[in-house]
Length: 68
Image 1: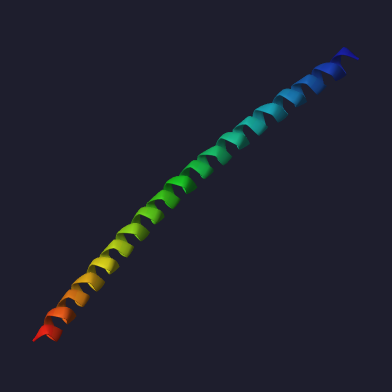
Image 2: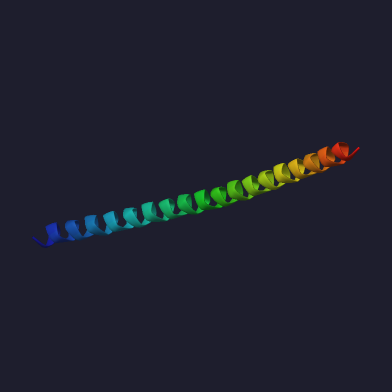
């Protein structure tokens, strides 16, 4: 009986340890995805800024041409 309990305790310990490792891996993946999302958001903002800047310059050029 004691041997069965020890096996059960060992299996429980292994299971908890494996779950802990899996949780760490999942947390690492979510952290990486969050960093990737932040990079994508930053790049999108830069692209939007550059597009707005280009449009503003184009509108400015069009206004100067219209005045002539």
